[in-house]
Length: 204
Image (cartoon, rainbow, N blue to C red; front, side):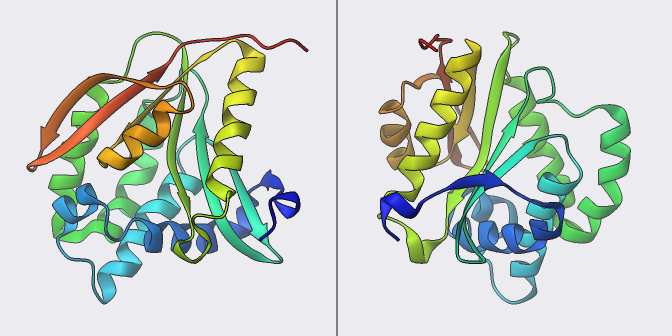
């Protein structure tokens, strides 16, 4: 894809399954995914896509994507300030689908969600994630374009941003967009870096 052809558009409800499938392929080697599910093979690939489908379709979020023709090649989930931790209503709605997607791994997934919640900042912020580019379309500017979009978006509001990552290479990437590490902790022998981007304001 040429950078001039990259357009960020809202993810439609009818596209959630395709977006979740792409996220599943992009995260298949993520250290925490391996920590939660073990090696992803066979039916577990569909289960991983099911988890992402739940995040995109049931939990509150603004979902955006980049397409190459009709194919979704990148997805970014953005959660509004105050909605990072799902309400009781959303949790009850999500639990049956989470069980279907995770099976016997559900206790580990719930432990991981509780772990993340402990590090969610109290300050008002947008929460970024999951965010991924289709493996076939990486290293061509799509990810940078999306991160610039997100940075500009939160800057226009003068609101901080927060994310977590399980890859040291991503820490270096996000630092280039104004994030810095505020906490680091491990679960299932997998390190997680929690990163914060202070609020800024851009000239309109």
